[in-house]
Length: 117
Length: 111
Image (tube, rainbow over all chains, first blue to last red):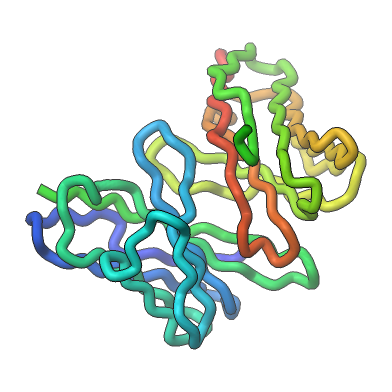
């Protein structure tokens, strides 16, 4: 399957700082990337959908000024958690959509575990 | 009603048995269906995708789709301890821009 690289895999930061997470599709062009958040023992929750060259579409209840998403190229999307607080501590996972005809399969990055002290 | 429902489990089967995982969905216009496996602390890994009614087999895995009943299942034959994980059902509309995940079923395969 296609490879999606996510970096960093683990971040510990102080409350009030900003954290940037990168998501790269390594062997395909991803016109659309997705950002998810997962709390312990809960399912994936879609935060936003990012299309290359345009503004991200955020899910209801997700603050776009707090979770800044940039999708500047067909292989890179970034999520910046601004002024992070302990309640933002979670497992953040990106996925990229490979267009295989009409199949549109999503492949996931390895995830970033964010701990805000 | 949740958009994608799965039995949270845990589902426990002995090694070598068939594990059956079920998923129902509420959106009748759904067109794409996926099963992902997620090990604890890791991100989901795609196992199967299915788009048409019927069965689709890949090695020890068989996905079954019944759009009329809005039901998709995953069978794992000859279950191995390494199959122990949480299995996520995902359902999407055209282009998958709003693909939704179930809460996952935790499977334990006992040696």
